[in-house]
Length: 248
Image 1 (cartoon, helix red, strand yellow):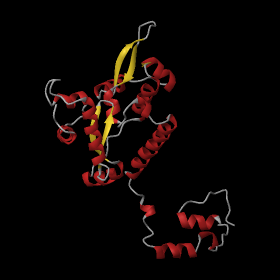
Image 2: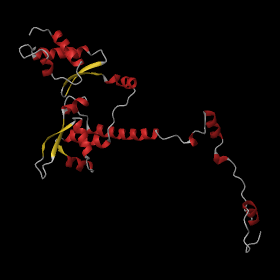
Image 3: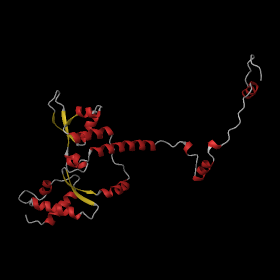
Image 4: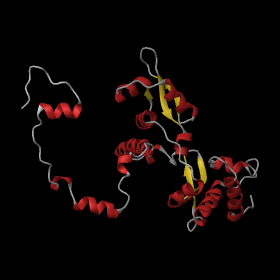
């Protein structure tokens, strides 16, 4: 094969930019035809290294994930893209994330073992959702009564969470902290939807706040209170006085 490193790099770049999913090295090499026409793997890896080097001063980066190589925007620019698109990232329930985390960190694992750790049953919908997204799959069956299915994560799981291998998973402590943060955010989002009480909108500006602060309620003199006679109460509320009670 007579292609130079730069020529191979340009072919790989075109393939990666037009692909919606990561591409393995074998897939990239197939673009050159059969094995007799494909560049040496050492040359192909050198071409990928060149592409990685070329992105060092750009907002893009070429990374290797579970199922292959892909271009992605650097994390430092993610917030700008989110603001420009004006869309919220997908959100998943705490139960789904806990189930996925247990599969990821304790695989292979059965549904019963997940339920034992979480202390609650795992709905069939959660398992179905994770399978439909191709984040988990059945890799075997436990040699136990009923031969329950064993679940493990997939390469698609690695790709979605930008991981090259399971060794890149963050410590469990970070996952727990993230779950707590998500729960707080859900509560805050719900709270934001509640209409503001009119009692909280009576003070219009800082000047009103200052006036309110200058005259606290506990410093106002209380009105003098004196006992009322039955006659005074009767006149005020227009009621009949009991015959057996005399006027003071």
